[in-house]
Length: 331
Image (tube, rainbow, N blue to C red; front, side, top):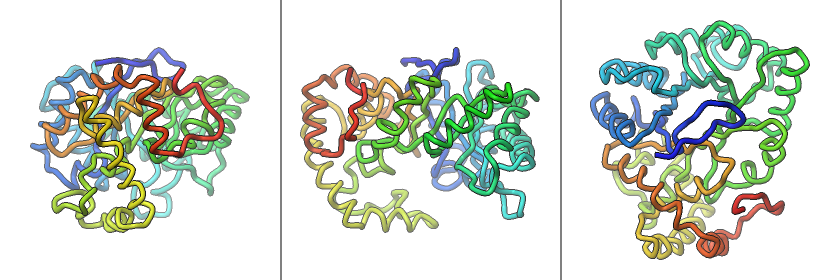
């Protein structure tokens, strides 16, 4: 396993991490989840991602039970949660001081932990001043309930505003962002955030490197039964896969599969390695419903050295979506 610094911090996170979204509590029970987490841990994964919204808190309960059952040393783990959607009450959602403090406390109870290493604002809150959110996150860290705080799907302007407020008020600024990033979704990570890597040392914990499975190639012949697109409450995903845009993307996946074969890897491994190629990616969050999938995902690290300039140029020619402002992605 490769370990990377989380932004401009001394914290080391595994280049590949494991997340509970969709699978824990929705797609798999605790025993399969335990097998997946064990496979990830055995591969050297130290970062495990979660959120209060995942399966309405059940994902955190399952992860907490698994960590306790496995008997892993807490200091060997980097565990996260994300705060925004905590319930149906008027103060159970958003990034108010009240919900951040209460949400963090509830998450720790579900995880059976005294602290999380990382705590994220799961989305921007347009109804709460950023200053209030910064003060609340600073308080969470001062209370020892988390070590670092960050954002998820915030704009560069919003992240910079939070950072400026923190510096002005002598508070702890956000360290990391958790954005969606994959071959078909590049603009924000490669272009919009580019100044933040230099100016504030922003770290990134990437979600959906496989575009919800589209980049595995398994949807090239339609939607197979037993996939997440067939799950209850995930009709939105099925609709997306049946859209005109998805059909164009599926065609491009078909064009990239021969490149994966040349490299001796699966399409999923190629897509994950492609994300890792970006030097501003701190870690790529993977998901799985079976330990065999975890093992396959972890092998993406072996593909990374094979992604030379020629291969990257061939992939770019197929994708045809490179951001206008060239970053140092391939330097």
